[in-house]
Image (cartoon, rainbow, N blue to C red):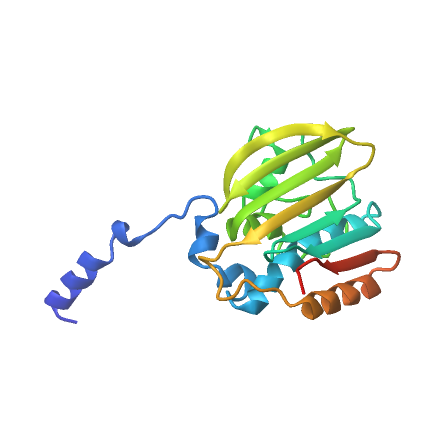
Length: 217
């Protein structure tokens, strides 16, 4: 290899060529690495990731009902009656665990020894990936007699965790709108979701999963 070519290689491949993507930027930069594609299959995969988190609660013995709704405007709501995502401060970050779950990749209850003995989720990054690829996302946690709410836009916090009411139940409700900047289509196919949920209910004895399409027509 000539000296000219060597010097050219050295000039063009230095530290300035190495990118460090902070937070959830990596997901938005390469969404296919996390959800397979940005086509209809990736769009539906967002729902599966959130449902998988609820199924983890079912596998742990704390959840027996999941409700999936396609709302008008093709937003999605997933509600479960599990324990609710933790809202206390997470030691490593000093932030509420709810915030960590939705803003940090590879954060969740399935990596250490104590959170989940058995896990249905494929990646363990589901909540934060869905958050990164949503135009907006709202999560409400029913826990400790309170309703805790956080809101995000494209992975960034728009509302810090706030108590918005009281409750006599436990569980998590997530509503999100897929980001039109990221997906080729934003229209959900009800039969695709319904079939997947029916399969999941069949595979998890004692778990009831209901689906509902609230779009007009």
